[in-house]
Length: 388
Length: 152
Ligand SMILES: [Zn+2]
Image (cartoon, helix red, strand yellow):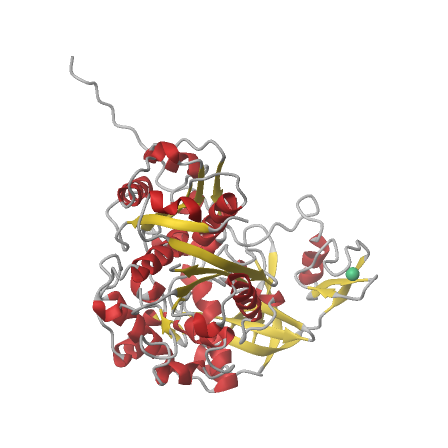
């Protein structure tokens, strides 16, 4: 296995964009190629495109060749779209990494894109309702908000977590996203504002939920030994972990504890040869405030059931136990499904290069983890990145 | 030469396409678990149990995920369950369900199974974890397809 480096990346501004799916692709593709020297689209041998639901949101399938065409890429080794719902971008990253690390090719692009705003937003909600088992969960309107609402309800019931503690996650991540020009949300929120925001599915209110977002992003991967041909400050992929148990809500390992995440964390740390204490930055999948609380627990930064107390005590802030989501998270940046994992990796690279504003800079960070969950939190995907 | 012009039209409305209709197809010619829906029509909530390894499978299957056996039998799950978790859809319902908002959704514990279901005839404030809920069968007026729900 060869060591793999990320040598550059680029992204669109995220939010409700006045641009089509393919225009988002072009914006992010240009930014990506502009970020590296000595490399042109014609050098790219493998293209993996993370896109969760282009066939539903934009009525277009076979999208990887469309991305290739827009960006002047003519893959000679591997081309495919990767779908793993909210982790589709990380799926693209993992396969691009596997292509380089296995020696299949020497230049791979991992791309991610989602256009989620539609004229009829009920249609967008319909798309989000076929993620779990559509015949047995979707038919009950079981999309993400009601599922994570019940997850929160169980966490509150079993451990005494409070809605105020959940709101604190939103406050933190919106604070960091005010310092991220790519973020969908640029305003601070207070605990009161979160608690008083529109009820979506109790106990989840509007600001407990990540947004509906348009966005695209891409990164370029090469063997670590070639990285300095293109950049002075590459980011290394140190390891990864991924685990899945069940699919329909009926067949999860647990509602109030994310057991597959614990398995994925163990494998990610083992493969990267690092311990939890070595991690300086954690980009975690805060699709809902309760998600981040349960992730503190599954990683082991606090005991099971103590995630609410952990945020209350400032544990996940920069300068605390672990800097969680200094990018602004999905709550602050938005969640353009296929693009999210790529956006996380670009921000970690910027952190390693000290190219983020001081207010959200994690000084001297060497090791970072990026996490995405998908479905009913039955799948958890992790990448470990290092500065050297 | 000046480009010619013509006004063209699209239909005002298109019927709900099959793949946007969440209720599963139930007829014998469409599915091998049509027995589930036949049982439901008579007021019985059933599922498949593996005769080889004893696993009770939900949703109903044609192959046991525990041992790959095809020797499955229908077992009755009764008409009562315990509410394990619930919420109320106040916004963001998919097409076809918008007219029902607000409505409750829950996880109903029946034996070892945790079944997701609409919880009818109640508002969020009326419900409690651990509460008994009762089977209800809904029937689509246009084509007679059925589905299960629970109510207080
Ligand atoms: Zn069996």
